[in-house]
Image 1 (spheres, rainbow, N blue to C red):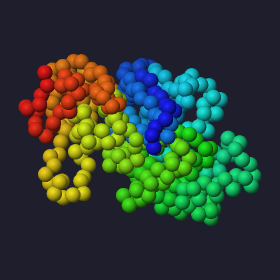
Image 2: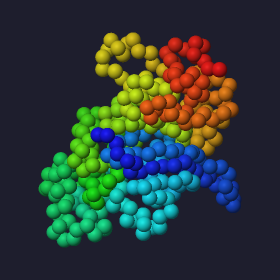
Image 3: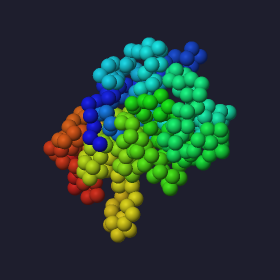
Image 4: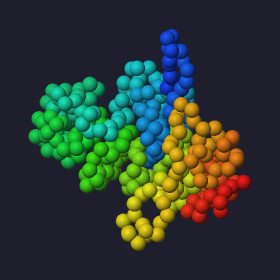
Length: 345
């Protein structure tokens, strides 16, 4: 599906969580969860958002949904700014944007039947009443591959994949345009993941949905996404069309992530060199100076430690924030040859 005009757009989004300590709970530091992130998602498109745990992916999704207030920046939905909406305005916006959570059991009330769970948003938003709510619930359950009699059961009576289908039905209950999928398959068995991904794709085709698909499994992201954005310690480091990013990754961090994806062909897998990063992901409380990836980057040079790289386009909508790529005219580094051969400057 070709993406249309931007349905939702983030401009210079920043989210700091304050840390207080001491007798008087003084503000001593900030967790810099998201730091100056900008992107747009076209109508009918799926933007995959990937990165290690703690990189800020979920925080971005929750800000777009107005579940978290941004520290600074702007968010536009359907061309209108939504960052300054009142509580009533946000409530009305809920019909247009929803979320599918990571854990399909923790996100469902164990004391409510599936019919009550799926029907609750229908009643709350005044979409239907009485018998019409039950009819809408049956329609939604069929849409996600469940049976009408499942409405009378409780979440603990379902498998993980079935529970996630209930979560999807609940998200679809108010007929949204935009859905944040927050690692919706990471808690499921591999055999079930493909079924849920195929369901999401079918629903997107039928209903014209727009997705932000948050994940850490790049093989899953490649299957469903139109474009892919890569985050590292609160920053976007690369953004490109799906095929462009997987076939020609520019940023060293993206290359390292892709090298960890298993290849089914044993002959190819044995010849491939894995890019292993040293150290752990830095703390967002005290991120490194300059490029935040320079402490783990195998090709980092002096400039990387003191100057933050610009998030620049290198043709065809392929963006990256890397001094090496900039100094080499958009050429991707070859990390498999070792840093001594390819070090910049």
